[in-house]
Image (cartoon, rainbow, N blue to C red):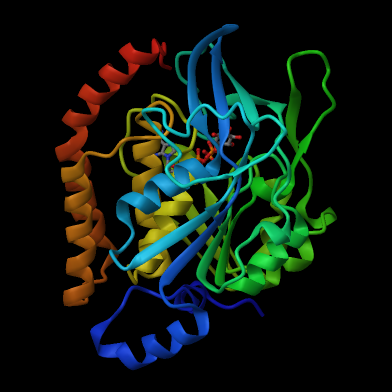
Length: 373
Ligand SMILES: Nc1ncnc2c1ncn2[C@@H]1O[C@H](COP(=O)(O)OP(=O)(O)O)[C@@H](O)[C@H]1O
Ligand SMILES: O=P([O-])([O-])O[C@@H]1[C@@H](O)[C@H](O)[C@@H](O)[C@H](O)[C@@H]1O
């Protein structure tokens, strides 16, 4: 029987609790000197197109969005390493939105995607696919030997172009105490170049892949509502806790014997790219701060909403981050764990910073000449 989300969340080591120092020390001896995470997945180049016209070119790849949130909101004692591969053409090693965590350099070109957005003003259905992806270049896969030879507190398998091989995921599971996986790393297939500029991205059933047998050793599997049918939620929830993100409707958690819906935060969607990635990182950060899985999902929704409010890898206002960290620290110190309180506090933060975000939108729009939805 799959463990409950509470049991799985407990597998993820929260930041130091002074009352549990001895236990923390023992865990650290077993799982490495620090509360260190391992992020595996390649950075990429994203080209955003609307009506056949390029409206934005940005740093992409789940690893970029994930490390952005981990850098911004992890507890002070938590760190992480990124294993990512890029080619000599990689454009964002020192650009204004840099890939701060170094990557392994390969002779192959950097993975790149073209995302085609429809001209529709707004999609009427919350779960309708909002973009068509084509993979234009694929860098080398990440092999088990590319991973550092040490233990990690947690791992995030966040490939975008099939680069996290089954044997690499297996190695992550061995090295990390708890592994969180984005389904997009496991179920993407790439149709041969049909002449339309790259390979169309489609999905295959998880059950038919070599990753399926590893699921029972994974803590959390996150899928978007578009990916969920390919994951097979009813089968997967018997092996691990499954999170289905539902765009502007928030998300749902499924485990064997239960499920929970977690409410979204308000956002003005500018560019949906990176919402799922930022969600997963926010969720992991929540667990590191010692939140329950459903409260951590709330933090996932918070960072997912922040991601859609900007083009490319989002910039967070330092005061907003300070406010969020204060909420998380208070919760830790005073043991406040009621979701409704967390919702109230985070919603207030969203509203306070909405004005700033609007200014930032205008600036980013002007910089990138992105036409918006
Ligand atoms: N328009 C939106 N308004 C508010 N939150 C959003 C919006 N779109 C996405 N999110 C947040 O980001 C999460 C991931 O978005 P989703 O679109 O489901 O994933 P993906 O980017 O993988 O398709 C959602 O669960 C939600 O928390
Ligand atoms: O939008 P999202 O699903 O969270 O994740 C996205 C991937 O699906 C896409 O392949 C990649 O090019 C983007 O940079 C981003 O990582």
